[in-house]
Image 1 (cartoon, rainbow, N blue to C red):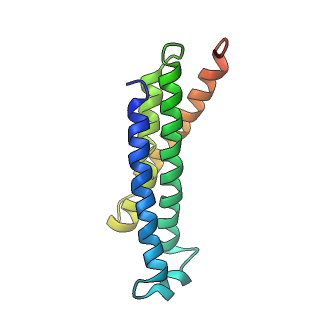
Image 2 (cartoon, rainbow, N blue to C red; image 1 turned 45 degrees about the vertical axis):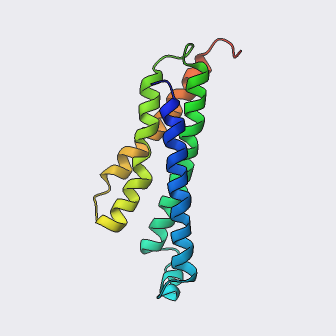
Image 3 (cartoon, rainbow, N blue to C red; image 1 turned 90 degrees about the vertical axis):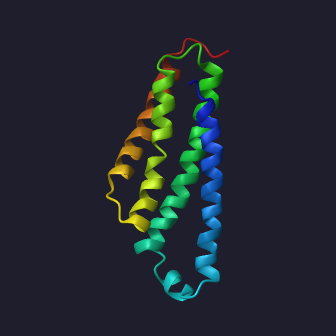
Length: 135
C-alpha cells in the first residue's frame, strides 16, 4: 500500500460526509423540531454532528493529500505503509463522533483516530524534512 487507498478512501469518505452535510441542512431547515435543533447549535448532538462533519471532510482531504504524496515519493520515503495506515485509521475520529451521537459508543474511536491522524501527519512531515532534495 503506497497511498492509493488513502486517495480512494479519502474521496469516498469526503463524499459521504458531504452527503451527511445535506442531512444537517435538512435538520436545520426542514425537519420537524428544527427550532430546537437550531437552538442547540453550540452544544449537544447538534454540536457533535457538526464536529463530525467538519473533521470527516478535513481528514478525508488529508488522506487524499497524504495518499498523493506517498504515491509520488514512495520510492524515497521510509515507512510509507505505516504512514498510510495511520492516516486511514485517523478516519475513526469523525466516525467515532457519529458513533457516540447515534450509537452511544465510547469515545475510544475518537481518541484512536485523533492520535493516528496526528501521528501520520507529523511522521510524514519529518520524513519530508529528512528528504535530501525534492525532485
